[in-house]
Amino acid sequence: MEYTEKQKTHTSKFISLVLRHQPDAAGITLDAHGWADVPKLLNGMAAAGYPADPALLEEIVRTDAKQRYAFNEDHTKIRANQGHSVAVDLEFQPVEPPEYLWHGTASRFLGSIMQEGLKPMSRQYVHLSPDIETAVKVGTRHGRPVVLQIAAGQMAKDGCRFYRAENGVWLTDTVPAEYIRTEEKQSE
Ligand code: HQG
Image (cartoon, rainbow, N blue to C red; front, side, top):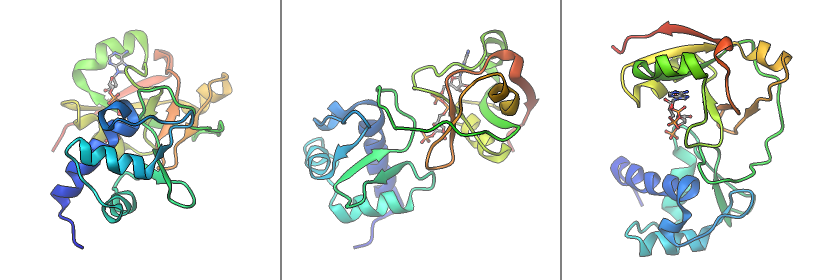
């Protein structure tokens, strides 16, 4: 069966809400590592007005542009690769970051960020991008984008830990202002 992009996005947004923020919305729970049972998720989605068959779920996971979700080996469980506000342990191992990482944000947050550093806000970690282009996209979600250069290599030398989610997003607890450089990017 063919699914439209609109149908996939609509369903994916709900899955993202359930797997990252509000498992309750589909009447399910996540285990300690963030995994949801696939049949329970599909039942809960139908009950919540977001019906999806297993093929649609497979298609969303496979084609998601940001690779937001992952199945376990036998596809009986699914979880979000990053972005959680609920406390889950995704079993990340610390990895050596590149010298620089990037953070896209909105210009109106700059004053506060340069005062208090980057904070995870409602999520578990501060999210960093491996390249400027991705960071511009992330920033654009919030308003006029600004890209911050993060001295990740120096942070690591100073004892900060970095993790890389399966989809290439970099994560760290906080970024003190001293490691942040601004470089304004105008949206086209
Ligand atoms: C800002 C998307 C004021 C921070 C993306 C950001 C990403 C501060 C906002 C993922 C601050 C939080 C995460 C401070 C941080 N003062 N503002 N001290 N510290 N902020 O959405 O990084 O499409 O929670 O700059 O691809 O924008 O959802 O984080 O603007 O990987 O899959 O507070 O979400 O993926 O916003 O995005 P968010 P984010 P998805």
